[in-house]
Picture 1 (tube, one colour):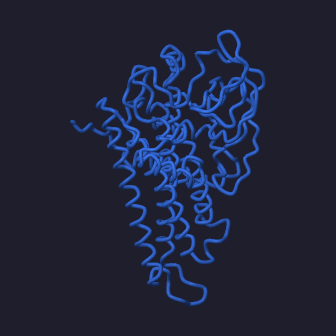
Picture 2 (cartoon, rainbow, N blue to C red):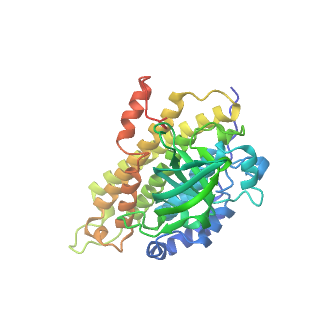
Picture 3 (spheres, one colour):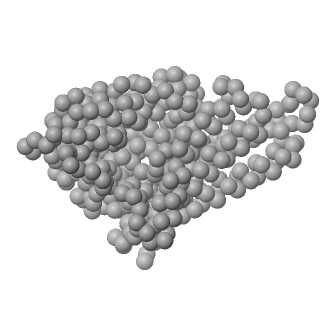
Length: 380
């Protein structure tokens, strides 16, 4: 099989001004509780929301690795910003909408910002040519900056399998700003409330179902990528934690002890952290590129291929949390203050690793897939 060419990430200087701005505005973002529209607009300019849109609708044809490396870089600047930027991938969820509906969605621009929440699916009333939707959904990350929102629905008697989503304009959804957590403060993962909205049948989809248009991006496994885009946030956070620890190396101890850089324990820990993170990244991107090549060539993507993407995602998320925790420990009492970057990085990294797509239960599902046994809906 001929190896597909991979587009390369944007040159560092091309996004460095944006990353510097995000770092400068960290406190503002966390106080605000979401990523403001001006930064979302910069993510749009970077091409994150058109990355996986079919090229016939103005999509950029970006490959998975390029997108994930961009999310990683943004996440190093701020975990919440990276998390919200990662939902540029969410247009892949829309891939199972009818082709004519996709043409409607992207008629004005390919840079549509789509976000939403699936769980718990709320019972919708089936009507002629659509559904009457009402309910509340939690964890609506990135919805504050979205123009299009999807929510999870089910009909009476329907249960199990991949979740159904109803897609509607942002103005038909009320966002209740109740996100109050220990980390990822600025993701704006508030509750979404819909009160008696009619959604046409052609604006509903089954998340993770077969796409209506055949492209490499749409062939790439949607649910696996949903885990990948979140997992790589943890890798970006861990990189920032390592860099923060290195920058602290020359700091003098208040007790008169040797500087951190002079302590053998810190030297050993730093080397191990670097090796752990780089190893996890190597496997993560190796699997990403391998499966993207399959998608680009039209070759079959097997269940085990998707399972390996999921395993690499859980592994890098857990590794990111472990590395960040160790950097925090090496910082001593300096890192315990809420004003210190490592305290924020620690909480953000721990939140990533506890996401349902990346938690300890995903190890069991991955092991079952390796053994050729059944796995839960959506895994892999």
